[in-house]
Picture (cartoon, rainbow, N blue to C red):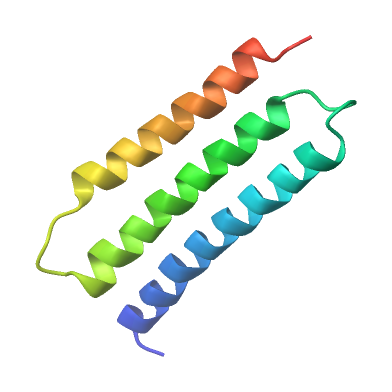
Length: 93
């Protein structure tokens, strides 16, 4: 397997795993809404943003090689990290 194919596979799997984590965390929030804090919600929103960021990486480096989506990738990753940090700071007991 050549390097480009391996990189494409890794980019796709990262986007897929971030999406799976976001869905599972959101299901956890919905299922245990009374007992769980909103930290699961903040985490799921954050992982959804990470999934978008990873999808932009895949789009930028695999599909649209002639366009530069670095600013959009960095912005979504930064906003997602800020959401997670907000949830961690303000949802403590």
